[in-house]
Image 1 (cartoon, rainbow, N blue to C red):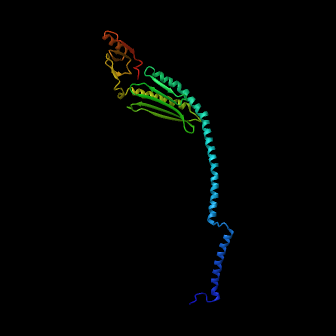
Image 2 (cartoon, rainbow, N blue to C red):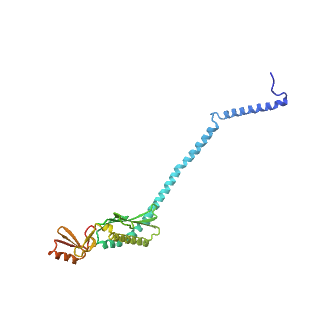
Image 3 (spheres, rainbow, N blue to C red):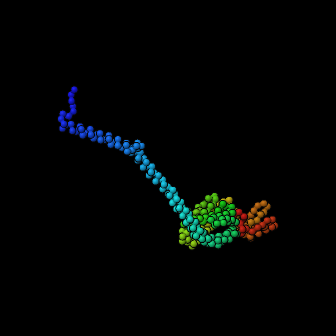
Length: 272
């Protein structure tokens, strides 16, 4: 058998050194086991540390929730305060500016067309319905606030159905509540009402709407819309329209008797 080990004491020293080192490592492992009688290993210690940190993090959750509740409650109370101290007084100012202008609008329509106004108790919405034979006409005003109750929102909507012409159908004005500009709100209301009047006049002059509403004065031979007629007369089951009382009188004279049913029409035929 051939020998491959060290041939001298000098050569054998490295071998002894490695053997001692190896033995020391095994002894160190044994001491660790003795000092850890439950048999825990380093990875388990790390897991325990993570669990502790996780517990600490979750312990902050109730505190965070409570802080958020406090913020929400404070924001809500602030909105309620702005609603009572800023929005309600602003609505009162708009209502004050609105009332005489609304009355003037209805008064001007009194001898032209029937107008129905529906006003919500809190003045958040006003709806005008106009009884027109030409189209369904609805005018709506809304007075509200944004989500944070920092601005008043004024909305104008005009609906004319069927839609056979172009018209200004919507407008919005936003005004800060903290420094509410009553004059700006009043001017906006006036401009919107005037815009509606212009649209209504155009509606009653638009041939697309008038095609089915055109009549002729049988004496003057003048064609006009029913709304323009000053006088009407029912004769033998037919309604006649006249441009004046004189032409109606002439019609009655030609028929040698007073018609069984006559009526004035400065309040033009009902449903206009």
